[in-house]
Length: 234
Length: 220
Image (cartoon, rainbow over all chains, first blue to last red):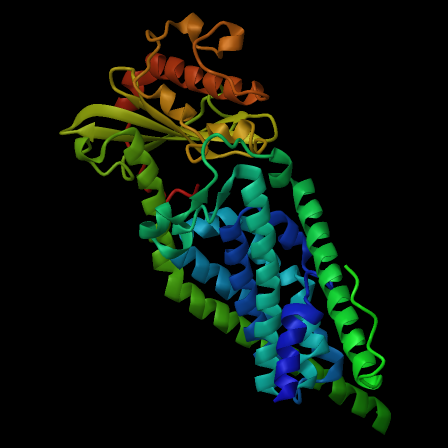
């Protein structure tokens, strides 16, 4: 049980593929110009990741070591093509926007990385969960970064939601009003780097805080209650 | 052949078989998905194209199937590549021509336009099919970003007169954008050239026989 919990924590936070492993940066930086774009590519990546992890784990005992990697690549490429066709059929407008980045999911190192590092060594349920957690972690970063850039760059949030969920959500988006002209830098590629840098720094700060708190708790439990731990600072 | 060579050959053969089997399985998955989605994708392409067309020429005015009434022209002033002309008719009478794509190098890459000209020479409208102009500056030519492109609808070579078919900075009537003059200048020039071409070639364009096998779904 705790094993599964660790897999989830790894994917969403501890070993987040975008913030810690820094994999898949090409689509991450290029597509995260709006929240909905991020969500779309994130979900596409997640579905490929789950499918490839399950398949790789399923065949892990039959595939010979020498041809392991070519087989993984074949599996991943097939799933990506299938996802691409499916998106073209059912989310045509979003497919038009994400364009080349859907076929490029093949080259997202996260996917072959998880296949090799996790799925080829673990049973199917764990591999499926790992794919899901890693994919969702990646999706969350894409969405936060996309939301950030969209809000700063064009003063809206959730614009284009109707591309994914139908016309009745067209007016669901939030806007800062037409007086806000947007900071173009946030939409341009450098904005993606700034945003990602900020997110990585933020994660680092939070991790430090958690560590400090844990350390303090340790000293408190070690020391008898008479000698109280020094007062917390700041 | 000694034992070791035979062993090695067997290994190689086995590996190749594994790889081959997965190649076939992968191809099967893709083939299956393709056959399940092909029809829908073609429909999407068609719908998306028609959605654009109907913005330039109202649907209820067209009585022919304009996807079947297509000619291809070579017009250096409109585009380096062949341009498709979709001919809308009303009860057999010429109604409008849709030029697509009219192409022009922009600031960052080609700007591809769909231009609809009504039989009397007024513009049904102009839409940007694709562009790679700077986000926040030049991309205001996109209907999703600003209303600028709608300003062409209803205009003709008499309104404004030909010498005023320029952006304001060049002494014309069309707005440029703050920080981006090149992009709107190119679009205005492309639309002007289309109108000039139309004025010169109108009769011929409506009269040419339609192509035998027009592509079912233009990709844009």
